[in-house]
Length: 257
Length: 257
DNA sequence: TCAAAAGTGTTCGTCCTACACCCATGA
DNA sequence: TCATGGGTGTAGGACGAACACTTTTGA
Image 1 (cartoon, rainbow over the protein chains, first blue to last red):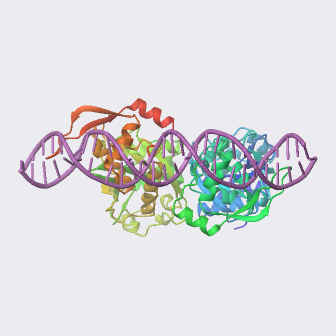
Image 2: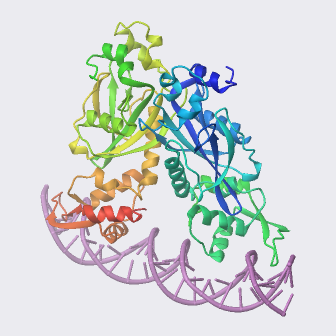
Image 3: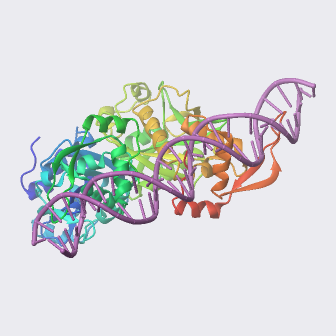
């Protein structure tokens, strides 16, 4: 089973490799500059961005397909990845703007093409460490980069809806999932962790209460090292105690605010 | 678009009506005799039960297909219905026991049949009022009835997993969704409402605290009528104040324990 | 008159919230 | 030396958990 190597081949013979009528789209979240970021692709010859996505090989589990797609766009694997909704509207993958792309390809029978059949998409969201990601375009796109959640470009298909729903799910699961663990680098400061929570929840939190609560969970380890960040007191570095973190998760501890 | 009227026709021509490779399964919950119940179907000529399910018409939204399937099996519509997970394992709809059913049908090319292609299933759960349901078999089944959640029969495919996951989702969403409103008849007593919560959560709750909390939400209306249920004090009937209930939901009030 | 379940209020402890001062650092 | 942001503790209030006695009813 070889991956298609050109768009044309992909359009014309992808149906041999992939389950038709089903796709996967991933909202990949990162955290950088105190902002929540989403990784987006810009389709070739089309004025609009979309979520990284793809199709499922005939004998591949859907969850593995999602991991594969994520790996292909970011270069990282083994990350936190979670289904959040399946989008089943019949017209959801109709997109008039695709005409330009297709016109440029010289493909026959475009109306009939497997790619444009009605497709149900399984939405996943991923939490990744911003600095480890190497954004990589796919066959259909010519740009791949991070966008600030508050300044998203025009999105194709129903992907705007998807991002909204992914974010909502992320907020709801904030208390039960290792959000910090996945979005931050190994070493981080308490203010950074707080900013992450504030950004996701989109509201300010009290510094002292935040610190108290986080430390009381017993899953953080304070390092001796401090981060030098300007003309003021230097904050300590912390890191997660993976073992205690996992125990806490299992026990269903609430990380909530 | 006519519905298939015989199994044979369904097996042989269903692909013309339905999107292939995608199905829907519904965990339909009811509450009766202080027990949480699930509606199950027994397939013809096969020793095993399964969740009510079906396929999506070519131009039908997935959520509407789920409503339709639910309506066909229970006779009721406009009920609380919610996606909980999409099952995408490649072998999930392989089921050796189906051989008996197929043998009895005299169908050609069964291996190649659209029905046995790899299918990804969107799982929904529904909350319905037990007494309003008229369990109705489908083409493939010869029995349709309620089963106690604690005494489930052998289930086909991955439907056991599905029920488990549906229940887990129901528990998590107990605080944010109109569980009581959908599972109970219009009039009910406080002990009945409490039993419902206890059954779903699978743990006892304190009577006094439960009542206090429920009443404090301001979404219940106590009726003058009492229910006569044995040699002891008669409990009051309550009903939900729909308007306040909806307001409370919107405001994101926690019904939680 | 007895058994079985329903109605009802108070106390205690915990957890969340609000809040202010001092300290370290680099410009 | 000053502006900026980080480190830290305490008091009050809200909410949830624990808990017992009285009342009603049918047998």
